[in-house]
Amino acid sequence: MTDAHVWPASAAVGADGAMRVAGADLRALAAEHGTPAYVLDEADLRSRARAWREAWNDAFGTADVYYAGKAFLSVAVARWVHDEGLRIDTATGGELAVALRAGVPGEAIGLHGNNKSDAELVAARDAGVGRVVIDSMAEIDRVAAVAADGWGGDPGRRAPVMVRVTTGVHAGGHEYIATAHEDQKFGLSVAGGQALAALEAVLDRPELELLGIHSHIGSQILDPAGFTLAARTVLALRSQLAALTGVLVEEVDLGGGFGVAYLPGEVPLDPVRIAKDVAATVADACAELGTPQPRISIEPGRSIVGPSTLTLYTVGTVKPVTLDDSTVRTYVSVDGGMSDNLRPALYGARYHAALVSRTSDAAPVRARVVGKHCESGDIVVHDVDLPGDVAAGDLLAVPVTGAYGRSMASNYNLVPRPPVVAVADGVWRVLVRRETIDDLLALDQG
Ligand SMILES: Cc1ncc(COP(=O)(O)O)c(C=O)c1O
Image (tube, rainbow, N blue to C red):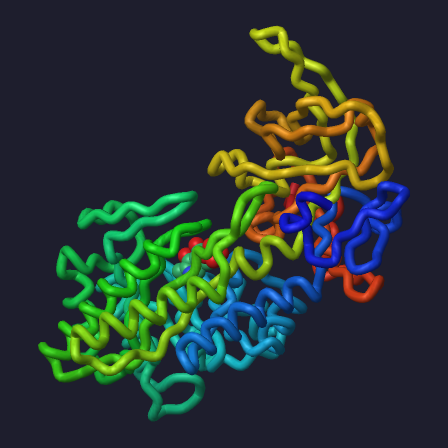
């Protein structure tokens, strides 16, 4: 396949034109599980998790990699990434509950969130999570209150916390921008002085143990410069805190946001290269500041689960539409849409698609893959060449849907959410089952 790097590593197309993932024929999988369905290549996901862990451990001697569960979390996925030596970053009580159900020890879990509820903080305390990432001044008192009688069942233990800071570097898409101005809801501003004030306030609380400083600069970042710039800012803050208080915090977390290739021709951020770039920057910056290097952690989500998964759809209505310039665009409707992949509607995200159930010699047509929802913005793939004979009943696959696909899925138009089916060694297994109309009706109290 010329576009091989956007598909799960084991994807292959046979002489019959049908795609196999980990040896499983997608036509057979669709026949058994229906469509739409997310199809996840377990070995691909595991190898990406390993690649991130190994690259950062090699570059730094030792480092912690937290899998960002917001990208997609199920009990099996939490087990797999933990098996591969990763920890788990959670952002809500729901994600925390899934990680715990998977048997991941509390110590290996982090809890984020700009508006954590008391119930979430209590759940984190009871599970003895390894770190709570404090996101506001108000949260310092709230976490301290929850930890008044200890942490994780140990009355003598303080709540382990980091403080999330905003470095002025906001990155995403293909570029980053650095500003001193912070106009967003996460974290505490370094430039505005709130970050330093929060770190000092944490040090003053006997119920809290300050592990370090956290920074997350954005998502789908393809330029390493944003990470190195943020690292420098955080390291300078760490050294400033040490000068003021005598406490040199041990850990710096640089967050997630490592970009992947969604389209043929795009180049993902390579874990080895970015780890080396950041390691060189951390070494330089610490030498300049005269401080020992911190322990580094990161929180990749998309770059581990995104490319491991494709969404399988069945084609329904096919409609040629003549545009102003008299060219024709073929609208290919599939049996899902913005309810299983919100990213095109939310961010204008671009995807690729391919016919995966048969061969075709038909000349390609300029197609737009759309969903079945009552919104004209319900677009799955803006622009893709598909065989001109694409027809109802064909199977289409859209790659790189593992991150923020199922996790952002909705029941818009009361459409039941698709299953996540994992494939390994030719065998599939359902990780999350398809919702049914009965599931939807069960929530409706009449
Ligand atoms: C704090 C934090 N960490 C990690 C991530 C994961 O980002 P990604 O999936 O782009 O790697 C996010 C995503 O929004 C985040 O907010």
